[in-house]
Image (cartoon, rainbow, N blue to C red; front, side, top):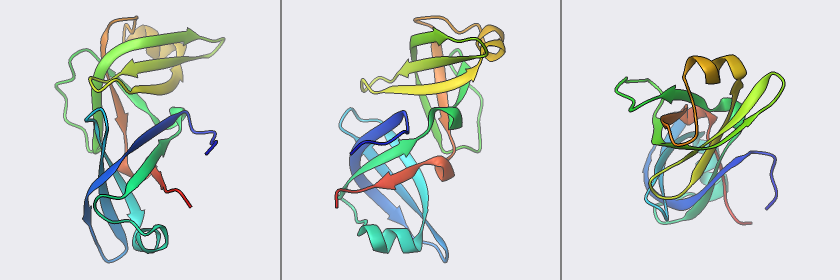
Length: 142
């Protein structure tokens, strides 16, 4: 599968909490990282989602927010992935920042160069990738 989303997390569904319109789907990667996605009940049915099913969770890098340091803040965003800055590529306006999680997965964000400076992001620095569950798209093998 080739997609334009920079972040692709392969894992297995560990829980599905159905709702009237949307369902909350939790998955765990092989590295032990946990992600939550909010998808429609129609998507649960059409994708055949069930506990134990293998899925790929996708999140575009511009949808990923960053927090610096050992994050002690609480956010409404369900996915708060803590790690260390492992990639930092500066462009004319934006930078690509990669954060390696304890399970080995690297999460990428595209943020302004101003944000990188304000957050004092540097290689090896502690940082968190924050992704709203509604910004996580699930895919399955056809």
